[in-house]
Image (cartoon, rainbow, N blue to C red):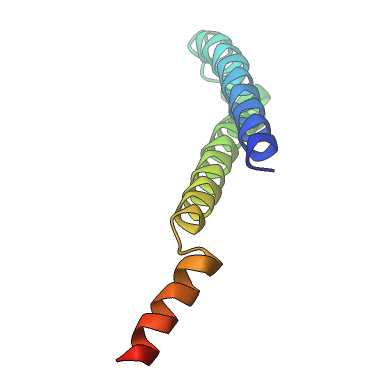
Length: 94
């Protein structure tokens, strides 16, 4: 299951990076177009805002993946059932 999670998170991160790269390219093209004339802001300003929202959402996705990754790694470092039972036995002896 951990391998599946690692594979899926890796794939998701790659997709996010690809999407970010494409969005940044489109945004750069749009910036060049906007620099041509002030009235173009009315024409494509909403599109620029959507590109920025896309980049923001990808940041949020990366943060969520990082939180999930940290959660799974911290749960891996918890005590096993055998370790808990051994500690319980030790405490009961004393």
